[in-house]
Length: 112
Image (cartoon, rainbow, N blue to C red; front, side, top):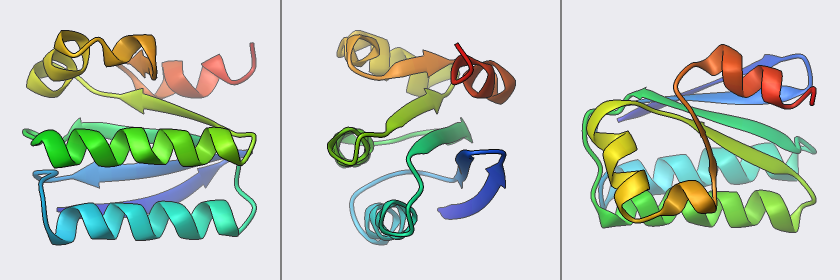
């Protein structure tokens, strides 16, 4: 798993690729996200279009990051499709996190 960070305007986009599962992947995502929050970023998009699979620990870390963003008076939006999207809707996490199918849509949602 890999996490690349890029800034688009006021939004910090974390491009996540590979399986998001218990172990180093969770630690890397959490550490990089915490560094962004500690650095003053408040608006985030998790681009998970290249995450083919995640376990419950991966889902838990995304929700933990969402909570961390909210605690910092920020927002986190998630971009995903396929099985990952199915997991989020199955567990009704779309009621917690705002989900999008395109990064552009998630970025545009910050303006409204």
